[in-house]
Image (cartoon, rainbow, N blue to C red; front, side, top):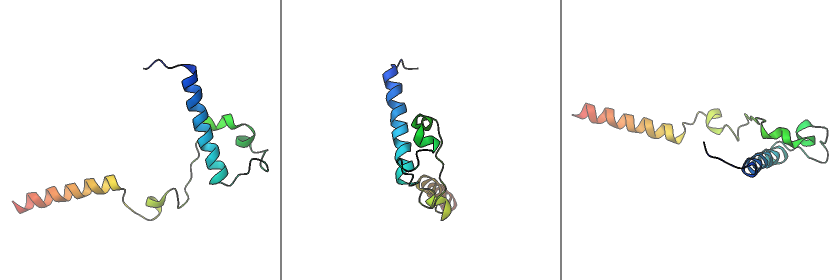
Length: 89
């Protein structure tokens, strides 16, 4: 394990909080001025370990429209090619 300073961990925590706060304001449309009573807006430090799971069509496009992910499609194409090569011999 690398020896890292407190400033490194503080930076990473603040980066994660900033990213998740951006999701709350831009994707979930929570306004920090209006929604001050929401616990994540009132105490943004809670976002450091929060899981912002979203199942909307934009975030889960492949799942909702039954599209195979590219790395799985590449593996399937490779397997199909190997099977065709084997059968052609």
